[in-house]
Length: 95
Image 1 (cartoon, rainbow, N blue to C red):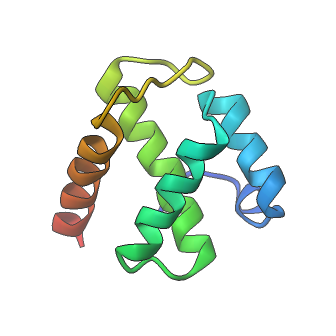
Image 2: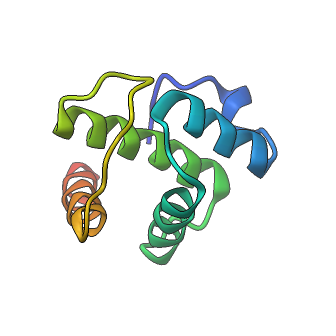
């Protein structure tokens, strides 16, 4: 999984990486934890790969909602699961 994200961002401690997601995507901690767990459950065990995927997913979700970086991404009831499913289907097809 390649993305233009700075490798130093991916190597930050968990709280600092979450704060990066908060600043750039206005993502609350519960949604972040859900995304992280779901990616882990789908086979992304390596933390660096999973963090890259988190950023890629957030960029995907922002595009899906027509939201620019730094704006709030909204996941209504059931929407997070649907967007994650769509993202995982696309990334698995690309592999």
